[in-house]
Length: 317
Image 1 (spheres, rainbow, N blue to C red):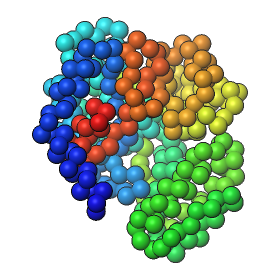
Image 2: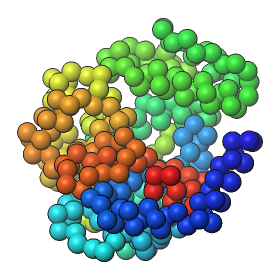
Image 3: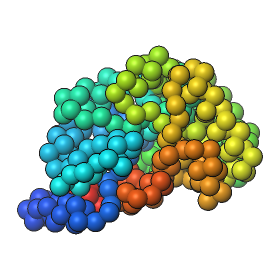
Image 4: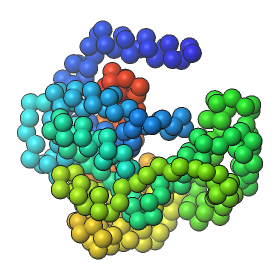
């Protein structure tokens, strides 16, 4: 409650001081651009990973279109404007992008980058941690207490929603910060519990929907199956990238020029490899403004319960 009140006071002060004007002016004078990293826009909530509400996204995109030059990565070299540049970048490829985000983008006459996960587009299932969040949202405390992972020391402190959230997120972190082979040895301990429940999985875009979106949305890749590449070998990464490139050529019939690292996890050698195979734009997270002159672009993770809070987040406050 105290944290929520503090956030409201901070957001209100930001509004009264109109600090966004000063930050926009600074961005306009420099070589920095704002690359905004979104995931889901949907009215359907999930406390483990809340999507942005469509009305909040709508108001924010309207603000962005008014105050920024909203462009795609391929347009950076030819962008000339008296406004700072912003890029809207979505990861993963959820079905709600088509249902809720795309109509808002069209309404404000802007486009976006969408980085898809080929394995999810083919299977129709979201990445493992989203399946975990879908499961935790729909199950009871008793079932959650049955989660047993060798090496994981987390426990449920009590039966409250907060304890459930903290436990679920710690499970996700534990599995995320491991190589794929190690994670896949542990995952059946959770999958068995999921199989015993009636869990409604978050829907993913299909290959056909991605092809249709590519007519006006800039499509990139987010690895083949969303593994944390900072924990993988160069050989693993190169094989994974080859699968991505084949999928774009054979299934989507699209060129591949944008690669977004999953989970903000990467190695410098992997960036060098992407450059060597002709990837034009390499996307990280790092929560920083991006250097418009670089092929490696940092992004800011977007969240917020109100348009003003999202605005504050986007501008680095």
